[in-house]
Length: 291
Ligand code: GUN
Image: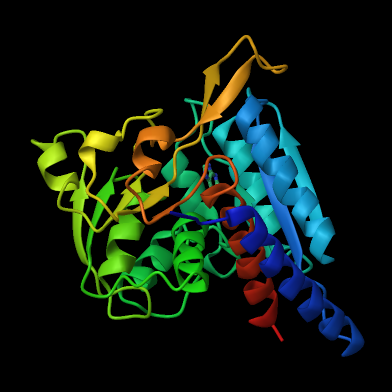
């Protein structure tokens, strides 16, 4: 069994980006500037956003954190987005999800200018992704493709079962893996909460992308020998024995599944760090697009 080490791989990608930035500086070109909008003070969202900002520093990007109160109106948030859209120094920005219930996520996503949408969530960019046209690929599926490529895990002709149909992971992942592209060309089954006989399907999978958000859902009895496992889940589970009072659990029961897997991503240290590295890649691309 080989661990797909997202931490080490993401550090390699960050080193590559750092080099690209040094070269841009030497050539007198613009340094990428990412802004992140955080609404409210959800613990996990704060951790993710801080990590994104810190990663910008690490590679030599400029970054701006826009912190807004959870009680902000939708109109005020849309105005903040307008400001970021028109600020020439900002190359790309993200609005961390989820947003408070009184704000319409979709309205917010559609307000972000597609050229600055480094999350790849705008319908224009999702449409381009689905048509295999150049665009910002959303960071989690992009990170998974990159991890497969760097470990040379072949997907062509393989049966991939994706569990979960979220707009951020399951849906785009199933589209990308089925496309005619390197680390695509798979036969994809997209499963979700209404799928019947899930275990019958997962037992046929050469590769499983678990992205449903239920801790340790996928167990050893549900997979075949030699399966490739991509665990996208990252849930805080109460654990009084830990200093923070919780531990991070993936959607995969690591102990039982890893015994059968040929490759598996750990949680933490698998898909998560890759997501941040790909956000940086998209931000660099947004900046290069303006050269
Ligand atoms: N919430 C969970 N994942 C993501 C992501 O990739 N981008 C943003 N903006 N919010 C998220």
